[in-house]
Amino acid sequence: MARPWLAVLVFAAAFAARVAPADETCMSPYLPKITGQEDYVYVWTLGIDGVGDGADKLVTIGAKPGSPEYGKVVSAVPIGGRHEAHHAGFTDDRRYLWAGGLDDSRIAVFDVAADPAKPKLVKTIDSFVADSGGVVGPHTFFALPGRMLIAALSNEKDGGGRTALVEYNNDGKFIQTLWMPEGAEYGYDVRVQPRLNRMLTSSFTGKTNYMMEFPKLVADAEAMKHFGGTMVVWDFHARKPIQTLQVPGAPLEIRWALQPRHNYAFATTALTSKIWLIAQQPDGTFAARAVADIGDPTKTPLPVDVSLSADDRWLFVTTFMDGTLHIYDVSDPAHPKEAVKEKIGKQANMVSETWDGERVYVTSSLLANWDKTGPDGEQFLKAYRWDGTHLAPLFTVDFLEAQLGRPHIMHFGQDAFYRNQIYSAAGPRLARARTTP
Image (cartoon, rainbow, N blue to C red; front, side, top):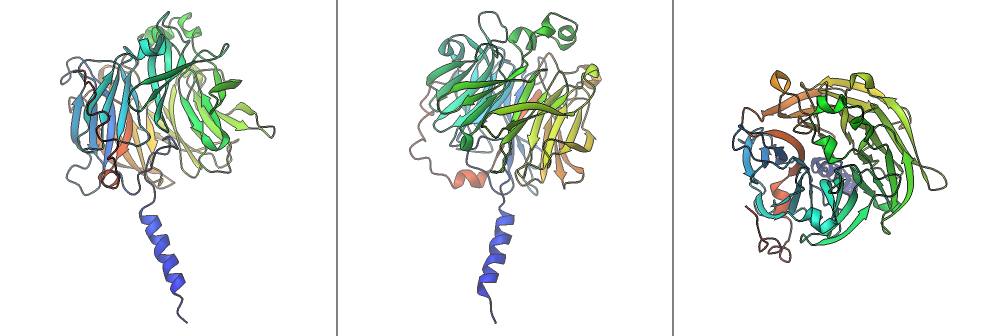
């Protein structure tokens, strides 16, 4: 007897597998996702004096297998000067990419929708410090509906760690500043879990420290006292801090679990080299506890970035100083088990895994004055295939050989995604805006 419904189910399953999301797992939940293979990796890159034009720039790398541009530089858009290019993030319509500089707090806005292979600089916001009331160092750019939420690192008054969250609308108009609460003044990352109405922020250090040469910093006992050791739980809709968690050792990137049944997040501490679990308790509050050691903190491995797989199974952690990627099985989040330890290079910083769990990308640069120099000063984007057991190299782009600079954060783009969007209302929005050369 024919079973047409069975054929439909088989076809649907095959189709779903073919067009599974391939976006970054760390993106804002308010962003539409790319499905299928990413075509481009956008890399926000620090300029180096004497290397190419020396300017910070957005570099586009081809990532579609079979394309003549696969693993090659497709375009590079310099913004003029060096501003300590660091993090970037899409607006909620994914049309624009906001990218910040930690030195002078300049924000560059790129249109990536008009031509995804060749993003265009359409606006600069050089009034961030004045707009925000003295906030310095825009770090995380997190898309909210119609808004951009920015977590910053420092302040204009003393260059220390007291800082704030800052909100703009998608047109680049300032909305509000939310200073970090007393006793938890430091900031770094921000992540929202909408279904819980909770927001988490983490903490790092101020401009005086992050713009200092790293060997000088670690030798300065007084400077090393000025790192954050807290995470803050916020009522997201009210934008109110409701709980401060003690997480000593500079907790950096935050990753919420992605499965609806999981009410927890992970973070790593740069100075104490631990994985922390931030989990909701039966009474609705959150508790933070260290659940694994990444390395010997006296040897300063410096864990700097994390990526959590879409099924909440794998946690990818990079340690900058030894250039290593650690992959933990966190299916039991309270007891992570290291499954893979892979040497990536002389240094390693940002890591992104695709939503379909098949590819992992790693970049090399942390901060201009913290990066290694000489033979150890490699600068690269490396792509790997991940099969749940081991990493297999796909391609490497040498940013020094290409005269591009120091690659930091990366985001994905795709031609088909933008062809399927309708931007009739938003099209002219930033096209008319003032562009600073």
